[in-house]
Length: 306
Image (cartoon, rainbow, N blue to C red; front, side, top):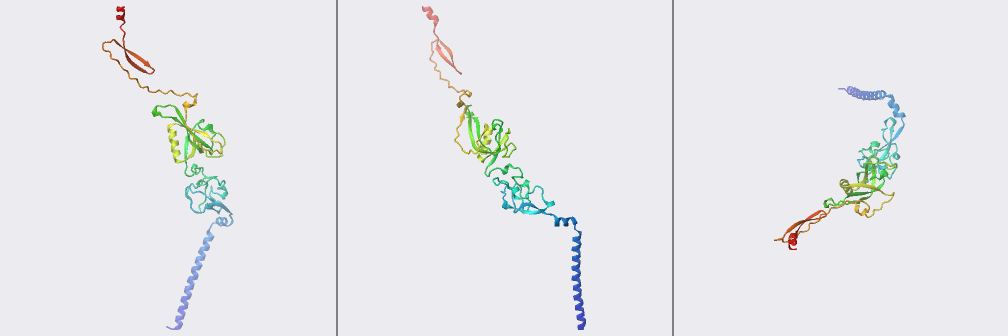
């Protein structure tokens, strides 16, 4: 084959490859241009003209019960029509009072918007569990207008709990006893009210207090075996004083039920009565009856002899 022919064939192949590459690039550009032109005009305008709105999101994964701190959150801008309802725009809306603990009530993932129903605290979900100090438990006590201090106890107050009960029924004792069961106990709620800013008196049926596990057991047993009453402490008073039991018999003017005591029956000695005229006499001492044998005098014989 001649050299000219080979050169011609090689040039033709090179031009063919270049034509294919150019055609493919032109086709791809045409497809992308058509796709951009087909997008809604409103979406383009929204992306270019909508201002960003701040939204607080999680800076890392958050689990149930985690204490919420500012370092666990960050703020990003969302389009106006994409801001979730119930979200926060700033950290100040969440941490209005740093003395109160804010916890996570529902699991959240990284970059997930922080929602008010997923946390406790201001603007968040009202949850008693978020108010309980770590290591303590909440226990509800049945009260009325008297045992609940006429409704003047409000969430956040501190009270002493008095336990009134029978001393020992098994021994037949009926003298009532009052003991101070617990002192300096924090009130978490009155019925369904958890607001510590409450100031109006409210006659409640239940008072929820914060106690340790063992004290929670003691309270439940006391409610089943006696009655509980609350005494309101002065604001700021934290002293725990030695407590003594008080019995009803120590009240002086208070009526005390009489206690029937079992009296042992004296042994009756019956004298020998061989050949004697004996009569049976009944002697009554309180609740006891005794039969005694006595020698009957023979009055007829004395009269005959006289």
